[in-house]
Image 1 (tube, one colour):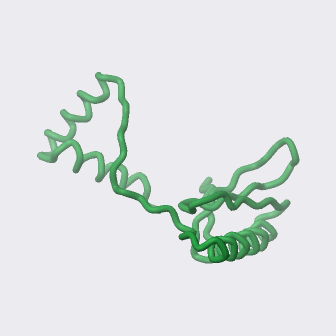
Image 2: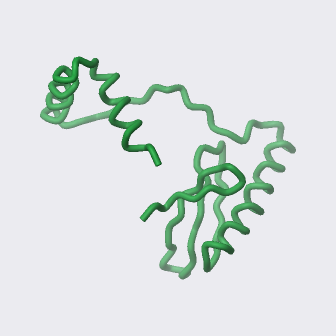
Length: 111
């Protein structure tokens, strides 16, 4: 099951909130929280569009960028054995560890 939907050109992750019995959507890659709830996917899309508009309006009002900026860098902590296995896998493909990890993440993130 793919739990990511696109609303107004923005991706949002969808989950079930069992405490209230509703679907919950949360936009990804924003500078702040913009979540929304509904009892069906169609209604969730409607609520998401409304929530996103309110979020954008608030950002405009406050003079801030609505979208999070990514540097392209992050640290990963691994078990030393997994680190070694990743280095060996990269070498076997004649790639640097960084290049190999980037390729693996790109492949896993493709939709």
